[in-house]
Image (cartoon, rainbow, N blue to C red; front, side, top):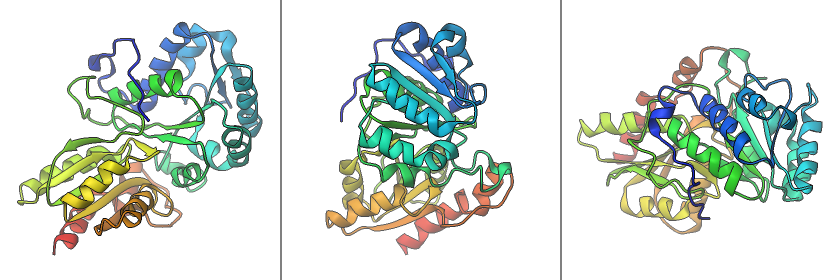
Length: 326
């Protein structure tokens, strides 16, 4: 699934030290002035989901549904029927869990051109507890036919992905945004972002780390640390979880001694399971280990502390890599 770049010139300097949701809000505000078909739907989360720039530029194309999230998603499908491009912005746990039936039936089954944009994904709202943790969304959204899932890993990647997802991609799409600021992975905007095509950030012959979203930078850090120990690590940014890039997975399976997947999601039904399916179904005969939330409801606490506690950490990944190489 090849998606070309939009015509607007994107500069990396415009998004320095910005979190994913902030980048999205800025780009969405620009889109408001570029395409009058784009409309935004929110459920009392316009500010936290960064839709205020769009509202400023196109106030007549913003609809606030209060706490009626399910009605909001169904209404988005209706707007798509009449030719609008609905962008639904809300917390991930509401879109993926609370609105699952409407996403399944009204958007995916009907195959409508609706963009579901989720902020506060993974453990971003760590202090909110399990009701506000969003560690099932990839698993849930993956199970719906027609759904595309994009999870950018850096500011510039989020800017490019936002434009492609809203303006060029056709059909149901779930865009998973980071709440925190992550160090930039790229030196320019010309790194060839395509929906459905992973990006190999670093080549390596010993182990392949395949990550999505915010954990991608963690994978880069681990690769740099292991290089000092003589372990050559490949790092793959799987920014599109569905449709997944099978070619890059099989290449890694055949050229390295094993794969470690890293995600801020339950390991059941997430990125790791999809990688395992690709490897097994193609007889690639490669060891695969999954780093993520191991089928638990997580404790309450700061996001990075929860990452460390549940093994989404440099130490845990290094130990996993070494266990494969033994």
